[in-house]
Structures are given as C-alpha cells and as structure tokens.
Length: 366
Image (cartoon, rainbow, N blue to C red):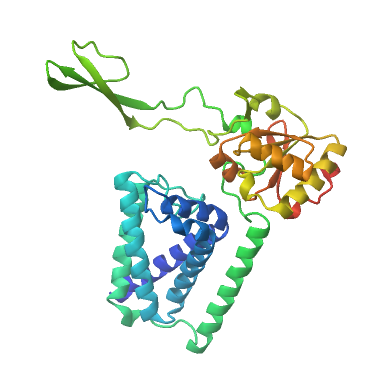
C-alpha cells in the first residue's frame, strides 16, 4: 500500500502540475473554454462569463499549487480534500459534456493534448481512483523536505505562477500549441490529402406510411418510400480527416478573398475578433504599427467577426488606413491571444505574431 500511495502521489502531483502549466501558459484560451461551459445550454451560469479570465487564472494556479503540495507532503489533509473535491467536480463535468455532447473538448490540457469528452471522462475516472487511494491512506504522505521550508517553496511557486500569468497575458503564450503557430503555412494547413480518411454518415429518414411511422436508414441517398416524408436525422458513424486549419476564411460582402491574400508576399493582418471588446490602447498601438508597415511596403488588412457599423466606427475613430474583412470569431480567437493582435505573413506563412503591447517594431527586419 505504501508503494501504491507513493506511485499515486507522484503520478497525480505531476499530472496536476503539467495540466495547470499548459493552461497557465494560455489563460485566455482556458477562459474561452470556461465561457463555453458557463454558456446557456451547458451549465447556464452566464453571470460568470465576465469573470472567466479571473476564474481561469485562479483555477490553474491552484491546480499547480495542489500538485506541488502533494509532492512535498505539505498540508496533506487539505491537499487530498482539495484534490478529491476537484476531481469529483471535473468527473461530473466531463461526464455531462460527453453524455450530452455539450463541449467537444474539455480543455484539460489546453491545446497541448486535445481530448475527446469520453477520453477526458476516462482520464478523470483513473485520477479519481488514485486520489481515493491517497485520501484513505494519508498517513503515508510524508514530507520530503524540512517542513519549515515547505511554505516558502509554495510561496515561491505562487509568485512565479502570478508572474508567468502576467507575462503571457501582456504578451502572448510562451509556447504556442495551436495550429497557427509561427512557421505554419495557412494554405498548407487547410489542405486535405488525397488519401485522407473519409467521414461516414448514416441518414435516418422518417416517413408516415399509412398512418404509421417508418424509419429507413441510408448512406445519403433519398429512399424510395410510398409515404409522407417527416424529417431526417444524420448520425456520424466515423469521423473523417479534419485538417489542422479548417475554419479560416477571409470574406467581405459574400466574396472570398482567402486565396488572394494568402498569396501576398508582404502582408500584415490585424486580428480584432470583436471590436466592442478590443482594447482602446491596443487600437492606438495598432494604428502606429500599421502606418509604419504601410510605409515599408506592406499590404495591411484587418480581420474581425464584428459587423459593418462597428468596423466603420472604429476605422473613423482611430483613422485606420486599411480595409477590414470578416472571419469566424472562434478562428480569430485561436489565431492569436490578443485583441487586437498582429500577424506578419509571407505567402501564407506566419513569420511572426505580436501582441499589441509588442507592436512597436521595425518591419524592415522582416
């Protein structure tokens, strides 16, 4: 039992620290996931959405600290109770998401290790078993250092976590796990290989035949039935290949400009996923940066999910000298964790990504 507790302690502690770190590396991304959970139709806790970022930072730091205290053997009773309450809640949440198909990715490991809802639930069940072993065998959780030093180790870790969180929020994630990381060619990322696995669907056609309901299943073709059609339901039998970048498009007034802009040699893309939430100080910085880019021979465009009226107001207020196009909001949030933010592209390849705090650069270097 002592050996089992030792294994559980190390495994759970390291997993919580790793899970917390990858989310602390991208607290904005985790806050987007929390907003999804808080939304109507999932947990219906919409009043928490404005506080999602604050909650995200608190949760991931707490997750890291609990992992550290477990490894240290510091405050074992508090630690195992905290672990148990957290894993019970997470297990319920992942089961709810999986069973009702509410959230397709729990965000447990951020974008570093995407998990399906059922994979997340399985992971939480394993953790629940290991944490229960720790809970009922607390006497084997002994300190590994001088107990007097534990609080200073925890304090140092807490301070480091706060500093790291501040850095990535004021700039960009230190490690980019997303499909739009620097060096990625967006055009290539959207391509589907010729030998890619195809998705398989079952179509359940419902008819009224002589007063009785009849369901006929096909692979897509409309069935030949002597009856009145009611509706059809589509069931995914097997997921097909989904390219890393599958929701990116540059559009305006129903016209697609994606290919044209991704062929440009010197292109600056200003990402403003929601203009009503774009930071005023950031828009001032973007104005100076884009004017500088235009002087250095770059073509500049903006991408947003906001409507034409919002675009017109922002362009006039900040005297922006570039055209703004439309792109899906989720895609824009994924591209860069800054609103506004800057992409530097060369024939569709991302040469650099900049938070608006870092927009005062010399574009001649690119």
